[in-house]
Length: 406
Length: 209
Image (tube, rainbow over all chains, first blue to last red; front, side, top):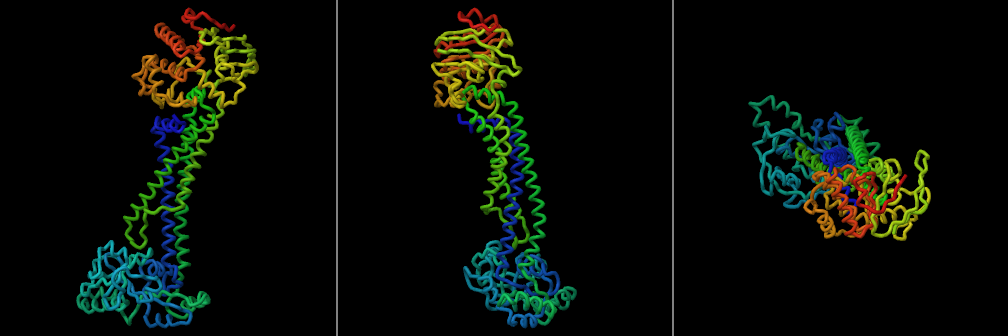
């Protein structure tokens, strides 16, 4: 009968208070786990998706919105820019690489992106099956799209107008799957890529068809197709000099705006960060309450058990063993809580992720981070913190006094 | 052989108590008599290595127990001294069997389930070994506490007021069990009491004034 088994049996002999302690700790650890996983994944995604893009040029509006729509494919675009002006910018000596984007349609919530072969270069894309898009209405789809929408090479599908929803389907012309990308671990996994003229043609058809009976609808679409427009331009700089000169040039001398993904991502993350901080303090508070609760539990049970412990001494247990029995009880409680909490955190995040609408920023609970070892260590520390005073008391207790009292 | 030499103890309130020297032969059975407040419990604690006296020595089988380190003293007590308290105090979260196995492991002896079975059987409670203490009657619990005291075959078996909370019938039964068990396990028996009913069973008496 080892001291650990005695601690173990002691925990089981008072299931209600043990369960309460475990729940408190599991709750605190669970929240911390979710925060840890979510903020890590979000910041990874923010970084991964924008790492090779120095600047985005688009219609005037919110720079954050421009970044969200053109880098992360989350928000709505700010509007359109004339293709002619975009091409002039692309030829600027400051620019090494420029990728045009034409957004506006989706297939079951997956965005259809009209772009050119520079997109492949900037994201270093590779095809797993088939080939990259070439002629009109050919598409290359991201690996997650292929999986989630069950599309394979040769399949056809109809795009729908707008960025979500499938009420307004472009029935006239179908897209065809020409290739599937290897998983990239960034936003391109969730995109359907095609050429720009496909996106234009899709809307040209639309206009001819719907000209007579749907004039209200036409008005809304009109700016997107007038005089060949695109949504935005992704830019890679030629030299560090461009950082200073180019954005100012765009903002001052054209009707367009330039937004830096790095800057806007930082701003976005600092906005999210406030919420994360609050939750973090909340979780730490719960952990603290849990620690106090374990302490009170052990301290009270020690009063009841002081006679038990004295008896154990008369049976030959040393002071060290009593110390071990009490501290092991605290550590077992908090470690059980920590493990359950980490597991719950993963489950909860996976559940949240599977219910997320936006496939671009989907979170998963199925990854394990090295940082979770800190949570483990924290659980251990709380157990020791809560049990140390009762354990020292058990170590120091004067058994002769305790025994002669009864 | 147990020897008490020039032992004295100081109470916290400053009251000082001295004990007469005492030689206990192996296998003998003694009654420790004294009114309550006469220092019976204090002497028992000193004899069992729980309370270090102000002066003097306690020698059990040639070992002067207060010369041992705290840890070795605990272990020495676990192996050589069995104590039965006025009230049977068992660990509530453990079964009867586990309570006895715990006594073996605290004394650093290997787990010996045959010995557990044997002791429980000799006390007539073998069928209770998987029960928890809360499921047993007071009389059965007192038997278990005797079992726990003799499980490691101690050289010294000490009982502190083992009969005072029992009726005549049970008191006689417990006393008989104590004497039997000390005989079976070849242990020296010291029973501390102020219970007159116990007196007749013993020939050796150490009296506190």
